[in-house]
Image (spheres, rainbow over the protein chains, first blue to last red):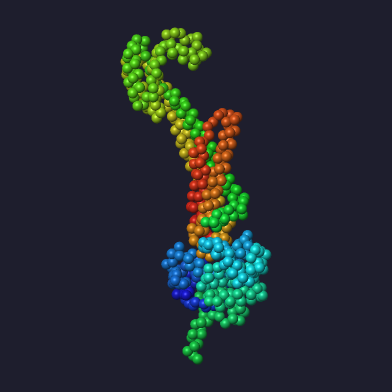
Length: 230
Length: 283
């Protein structure tokens, strides 16, 4: 479903960001993406939603392949993905429900479908009672839930989360992570970049570790290589 | 479309100062353009009035027979560049001279001035070349003693009009360039002010055309408002001048509509050209 095949990414100024990265994330899988700052995690995520294209190698997301993807096909791909960030990226001058509805409006969803969809999603992330609040009136954890609700509007097959708990305290982190687990349990793949090693250790999901642009560890490969020894 | 309209309105409401600046600068650019056009319009209509008086006067000898004069008049009148030919006899010449030069009326005596044929040129044939041509033809006619046509005066008149037209074109282009720079800068500010919104729109799968739509509407609205404001300012300036200095003409309704439409077209076109360029910078 998401496949990186010998992917290189080189920037003219800062040099090599990804160096021969290959992996595959299957439908419905949960994968952590770990590694130090600047190791290439965000570049990998950006390549999944095709904000960046590989210099060499190829990336497949659903049925879309880069390089070779038409510029006009990228918006269509993004409608099948959900993306959340550490800084939430909510519109401060709009209410919670307007923030979520915004994502439906920009893809020309009929008005009568928007309201019911928004209220269902806010119920799902536990924020139905805060629909008319503004982001600044919410805690960090609640704001991230709004961002997740917005990411889910189009029933994505994969949710890409770039340090979603990076700005949250322990309690909020647990709440948001539980929500991501629930989303995954309902069939959506989740790729989560994180620095939080505690969270990684406590949960037995697949781990992809990058360092200096290279994939240095893939727990699924380890499982595979260990299997024949049993 | 509904969202695009709402977004465009939001841009006005959220950054009223920036939007007002955009509208005002468009208005001032068009106002400058409008004022110049108004001056050009008035110069042109003044020139037309003066030009109507362009004539070739052929003075006749005293012995010119009436038949010959009639034939000359008929033949000249048939020419496509001639509007009309008028015979001025000695008495009429005297009366006219006394009217036109009132302070010298006692100097003129009966029979002092010769009879003449006054030839008025048709519109489009009042330029120096055409006037010279007809003067040469008239000079060869029998009983014509002298031909006067104020060659210098005609040439000067045309030079003024040509300079006015050239100045109009140069200033018009200069003002349009200023308007383009200002609108482009205002779009850039709007794009930067809405960077977060644009990046979210793209992230959730909005097409480029969709992202651009509110900016085009915004540019269109600013252009229309700027055009209307410019029209009002030009009208106000015209009223002040007309009331206090000299009576001038204002644009006809069709030109007023063209002015506002030009504002709208300018706003939309510049938005379309600059929004793509600035959007590339938003991640």
